[in-house]
Amino acid sequence: MRPQTLLSMLLALAFSPVLAQTTPVPCSVAEHLDLDSYTLMAGYRSSELDNDEAAATYAGCLAAGLTRDLKAQPKLSARIAQLRTQYRQLRSLEGQLAYMMMGGGTMYTHAVPRSEPETEARLRALATLASSPLGGQTGARYSQELRLAREVFAERVAKLRAWKPDGSSSFDRATFTRLIQQYQQAGSTLMATLGQRGDAATAVGYQPLEWSLFVDEFLTESQPK
Image (cartoon, rainbow, N blue to C red; front, side, top):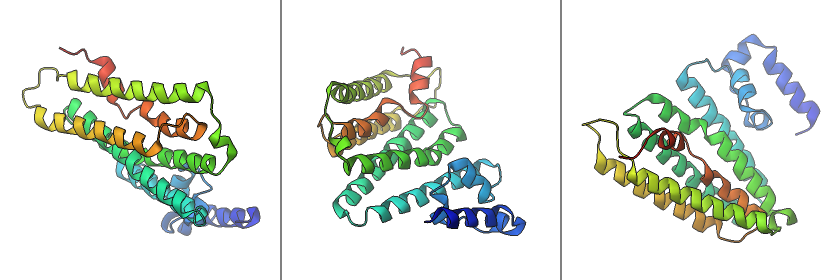
C-alpha cells in the first residue's frame, strides 16, 4: 500500500466520530499499526473482553498479511502456519496451567489471546529470516541459544512436575499432570518442527521457549514441598 493511501485511510478513520466507533479497521491498515493504535482506531472499549477481542482480531490481520506475503512460497507458508498453531498451543497450555496453579482467575485466560500479536511478530521474523541469507548464519551464539531454550524448557517441565498447591484440598492433580504432559509434548513438537540447525532463524524460533505466561513467575514464588 502506498504511504499516501495508508495515511488517507488513517485520517479518515481518526476524524470521523461515527466511523471510528462503528467501522472495523481494515486489515490492510491494521497490519501497519501497533496493537494500542489498532485498539483505539477500532473503537474497542477498555473492558477485558474487548481487549481480548482486539488482540485476537489484530493478530488475525497480521496472520492474513503474512499469508498473503508468502503466497509465492507455499512451503514456507505452510511451515509458518504449522508453527503458529504450535506456538499458540504452547501459550494456551501455559494459561491453563497458571489458572490451576492459582486456583482460578480470569487474568490467565485473558493473557492467552493477548499473546497472539507477539506470536505473529515472531512468525514474521521467522519468515523474513527464512527468505534471507542472514537467517542461515551459523555461529556459537545461535547454537548456545538452542541449548539454552531446551534447558530452560526442560527445567520448567521438571519444576511443574514437582510443584504442589499451597494447602488446597480441591486441587485436581490428575488434570494438572495431564496438562504438564501435553505441555511437554507441545514443546517437543515445536522443537521438532524448528529442527536443530544452529543458525539464526532456528535460534529465533526457539527463543519463545525461554519464557512463559505466568508459569515461571509462580514456580519462582513457590517452593516445592
